[in-house]
Length: 187
Image (cartoon, rainbow, N blue to C red; front, side, top):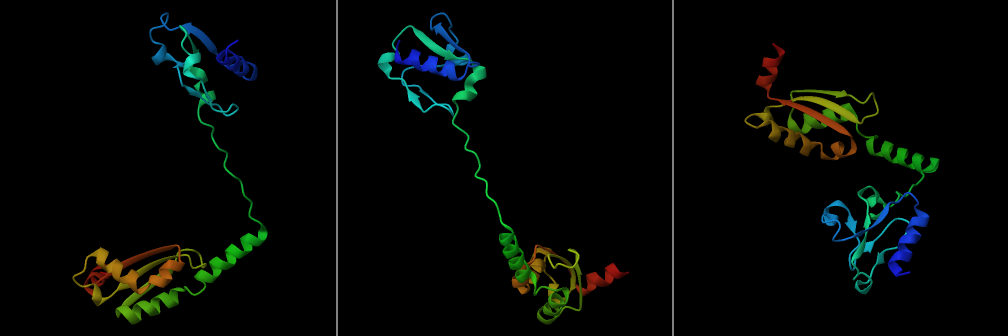
């Protein structure tokens, strides 16, 4: 028994449903396109078997071994299982404490006072959309500094003023208006 035949019989013993056929290459002209052909130097790998390379001197026969198309998944690269991890209650407590410390100083009143002070905002409305935990805010800001600026430039100006606070919260939605635009919206 050759090395190839012993390897094939070992595969058949471990995987009885695996379909292996032996065909003469001249009997089947479409061997290459219909199945995986074991040719000189082919590396076959499966999750249960190590990589096996057949030397060229064993393969110079008129008969080649063909794996059926439905069995290709046995010989693909092994899929590594994800490593599972567990987080203890102590880890959860540490994460929650860190998140609470990061957002403890962010309040709607603090945001409003900073915007009024640095942007000379005439009108500021800040709504806490997170239900009181300080993670999501929506703001309406009316300032004369927004004159002749695009919406993007206005948002960048507000974000530069509140850079530290925005880093500590999850969601920030500013709506920036000039005094004239605000008057038009009120009517």
